[in-house]
Picture 1 (cartoon, rainbow over the protein chains, first blue to last red):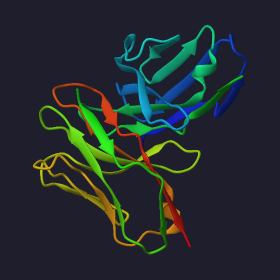
Picture 2 (picture 1 turned 60 degrees about the horizontal axis):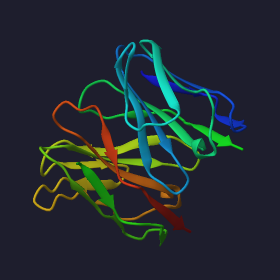
Picture 3 (picture 1 turned 135 degrees about the vertical axis):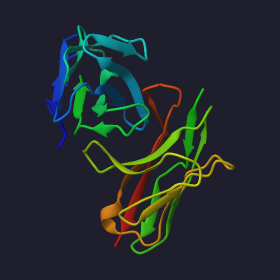
Length: 112
Length: 113
């Protein structure tokens, strides 16, 4: 069966520091991968999605970036965090389009 | 563009009460429709889905019917439990090759014993 992992589970970072969040999927090949952010009191915002290695689509201009160095690995990064980057970051995968997306457990990021 | 509108929360019910969470959508073509549930501190889990008009998705006592004529996908459960307390998200999958899900803002449900 397929599983999706995210780490770290929680993170507290100062403003201006770098960020790296990692997501990996097991038990499947060539998944579509997604990064979402859920800010306090808001819905889900799609940040990036990827249909293959090295292929990244950005939904919202911001100081975040994403990379997919391996088939089942998706990384969310920032060079300098802002206060507004605080939130709950969710990674998800799907196999086909349109299809159900399966979510990881999330990373709670607090920027102070 | 495509969008999903769901009823504002929070919703507070007593155990064994009937639940309805309204969801309407705007979309071109024929999207698939989903309900996801998020328990406190966790990621989202798929609750149910429907891929074409008049389909009924069901799981764990929850049901929703894809109504093309009213562009709705309301979530219902006949008798809620305390363990159903969570945030519920309605979503649609854009047709035409897009990989994206469009989510509603979520409805927080609290069930009291």
